Image 1 (cartoon, rainbow, N blue to C red):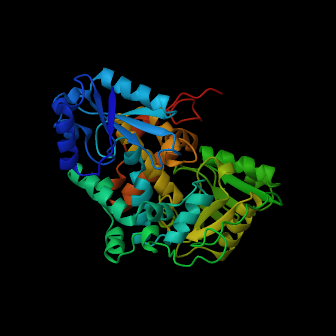
Image 2 (image 1 turned 30 degrees about the vertical axis):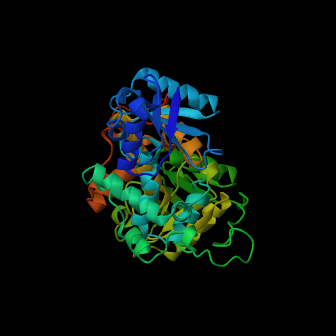
Image 3 (image 1 turned 90 degrees about the vertical axis):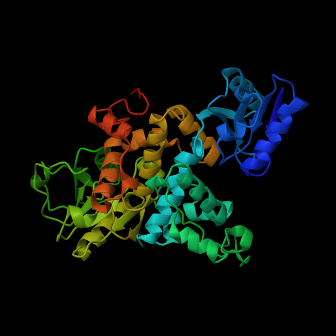
Length: 450
């Protein structure tokens, strides 16, 4: 037997229901499952006569469409009870993952930074909310940006979840609610359900989506003509060199640049490592992974850029100016990335810019959850794809980006912001220190075969 409860998200209501069910309504070996998404399964189970028979079965909305089912083990949940819940989910055609009890369980916990870091970027005026969403869609492959998603779910609902996380964790800085969300809710802008959230949904004219312009078609790659110098040993530098060569550029490293004509652009794709050969003789674009452009090139004329692998996923690359950035570098960077088939957008200077900061914070949260035993790496990735429509599993994505790249962004943010929310997971640091950088070395969160 299995009974699934789907009462409103009020702890006392659920506890009262479970106490009544345990009082002779169901058999002694019946498994009681709560569909809570925000309450601790252990707290609900405490009211049951046999708490070891209580589990969580977290369905994702809308349940008929979303394939994921998160089976949650409370502190006293037995293996037979968990097995029965898993079997029931699989009989429904769901992809079942197992998570330990805790704020947000596995999937919603890992996804928290998608909204919270976007709100922090908006608060710091790195980019507008429309541009943050556009970057996530075009550069990251997400179906919806974080502000679109917050409006869809309900800005008030998201704020309540943030407050719950923050309270349950006794003030974990990574989960601190945003004052922007507080003000938005106070103004009655709750999202689509109220007609206005971050976007305005009152105008129904024009083709969908009516609340924003449609995304442009990707550019066609090609048309490179001249020398491009690509510096650095990162996976990103290697991918940029390959893409530049395919686009028609004479892509060379700094060690052979002196033998060529003056470069059209010098692209520093390093992650902060020392470049033995001088980078000179042309305009420069510097990867803003290990820090902001202002920190990496103080007083210099370079522009900043950032992109995440795989490059073929992205139709957009972010650029940033510093106080002394040369216009020639800005023009050259726009032209270079256009030949790679990438549109460009300008954002304010910051470590990781927009997409890198959001994605690396999601990876960081997933690594914390993994190290705390909340779930497995495979279940993290399955949950993000099947439960939240991520373009790829977040930990396999981390391995493809390169864990050294992820750590560079996190350390750059911590170094410049001095905020505990940006402290890197010890698991990520341990993997990097042991040389397990992901796909490029054959091992990271996963083992990769050539």
